[in-house]
Length: 515
Ligand code: 3SK
Image (cartoon, rainbow, N blue to C red; front, side):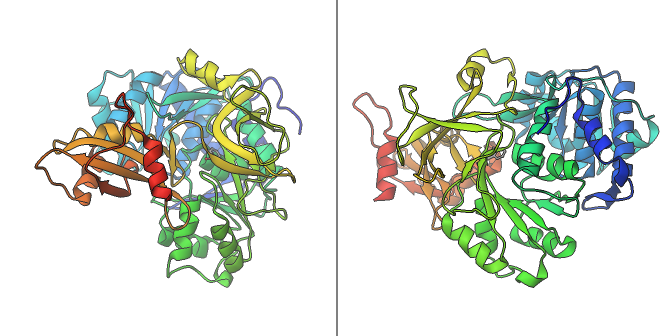
């Protein structure tokens, strides 16, 4: 694969790649279609609008939108202008966005109408530098400083691309850890190119004739590659959906738009297989499926392939590496493993003392080397140094390698839990639980469900004389944290196992669950 040139603008690269496809459908969303020609025009006009608002190269804009053509235009239009979109999870709270607005010093916000009230609540919580808000598909009247995105695109003149560099900070994604605030992960223009070439083309072999659909949303690194950078690099068409990827919503797109490539996460595949509405093989056109977010249990992969006759390519990536670096291959799938290093990346398993694991089936910490690693965590030297160690990036995952060279997931080396493909910090959930006036102490661990997928379980000690139901506990967490962080299992206990110094022994709770 050729490296991008030193002067490189990824949005301009996509425009040039698809210059001969102006009449072809690029995007199909909940309200309509956009051809490659229309997409190019909208990107150029959106960039013109940002410039007209006074936004300068490298200034940040918060991108808080549901999946739609507007998300793609806002992201690529910003890159095209050299302005840095900070793409954020749409499922968070106003407090989370308040932090992100001030941490990124965003000068503008690009938001879906449905999410505008939450953005406004965030802007009421902190002093931000936001001067302008561009609203996609507004649901009510707009006020001073707010622009309807459709008018914004129509009324501004197209401009030429910013002369950005391949190594220049281009966009951010937030990555969460077990403690502390999320970290602004700064990626370059070139990183988008590398992931599309090495994984989208190199492993998934996406084609111009493909129609792709991703249950993982665009604000996740996984979804961004799946439904934007990979298909648009191949001249394919993309189906985008604003709503939650329930089995019904997903089946509807599979049947209505006949995607040939589907990307999901194990929880989603498990839910679809258990649904009475699962379409028959001849109702869909799937040729390839992809999974990431958490390890795909063998049984789910086998049942899916048996039903649809189509493999699920399971891989692992990270926000820090931008996309998948370890993966199965079409035609070479070993369910239960994460496959081998994606060509262009190198992986290493290390012992606790830093030496390289040489034996088979021994557990080691996974490190990755490859061209798409992030530049840094914004304003966080300590965590940057800990994760980005020269050419190697620490993943935080533990793996084993078998004699045939296939890697198998063996857990995390921090306390993070991956629930339905999204990181959840057990400490954050515990800290919220103990805010309840009836709760004395709480400990949160990961527990496998019957599909072998990790869910959160809370052990709770109530204060003397207090009572609480499981539903009350769940509702309490959902009101205070992003709702997906609520514990799925709850057990009320008389006491928690502790060390002599009073530290909660979570490993004992985990052992108890396994026995
Ligand atoms: O969770 C993953 O495996 C993943 C895959 C691709 C990009 C980003 C992530 C976190």
